[in-house]
Image (tube, rainbow, N blue to C red; front, side, top):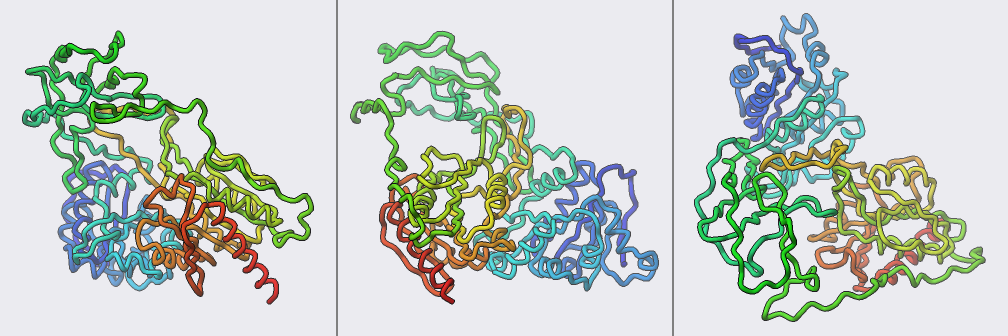
Length: 560
């Protein structure tokens, strides 16, 4: 192996990372990644591919890493000692950055035609890849298959960023910033990730003119049960009071190579006294907290009759709340007959998922989405009325269980994946649930508190792909159907998803309006042969039509 080295200035004592630099315009960011790893105490050795050497030089990487850089497999001195085997075994983690479409394809196929791919095939250590390529290359079916194959083999594939490409196109495929890559590397190695925080000692922004707000006196800012932290400025705006920003608004964290912009802090003087208005709308509670830098802010005095409303002179007064909130759906399920032997889906097992998933961050907060579960519950009810044995795996929703349906309640995507696997075998699988794509790598045992003016860095990892995994199982349902919630190019994206996930059908709907949580839906049934578009209709009617299509498909399959 040809090497380029520089004199080492001190003994390395950190974790050992083997960095493979692929050929792409994003290769220049590998230099910054090396610098970041070294700064945080890690030891890094670089392998530069022939294509990568067209963008960065071995000398640059050697100078930054203070280690030799390896460029070729055909080096008599090193290969006499099986150097590629040693490299693959000595590292604690192998990182491929940037990972081009070519490198991903070779890794997925087990090709070993140069130093980088040979040591990747020979290693017994964990591997992490950071893809970077043109948006069309990233979204190509071949690349998606390679990504799935690598993840199935245990390779950690980091999702690329979305943005402007060097080629002028826009979309996913950009290499994430080196600091974000380092945070993922640090987590994989069990190290404390670098904090992306503003630089200390920042000066406040120039004084900004105060714009009077309705209900002037204090602004909502603080911690309220169930809502997490809300940041803002609740200083009284009396004459001469400090009007500089503070809290989260005062620290904009750069996602570029520079780690943070200048911190903006509130003045440390005691807060100015609040200006008393002549007309008091509501009495001010005693003990109201005054705003201080780094502490929770108090909520303003509030008219109890105006809760959840914004009241002004030119707007109507708020309407009173109903004494009881009535359920909008679920309490009018049609009954199912006692004798189901003559019904079209009798003897068939239908597995349905519905609702959102909650991915916990700490004991208080979680990652979720707006799914109500109504469409999935309606499909489960319609399948039961057609005589099927129905298992409904539901995320956290406030809906009653349809008659004749076996319900399994879960919260997270991992729990849903496990419940789906336990419910197999099934004749028809209908994956309606809006499963969160991401979850936090670790769940905090206690509520995460504010740390000065910088938000905590949440490290995310991908959730299991329930539909794709189910498609590859031996117990795969004969008819496997997925749902696609899209906001643009609905049918086009659904066609791509059907191929990528290996599903028989994809039911696509546009969720850019009020579909999630609403009572109506407009869907497109995308199969391998055609696309059937339905008019907007209530979700119960959508469910009835879909179950009719299920019956037709099962009947045709049985007749073959």
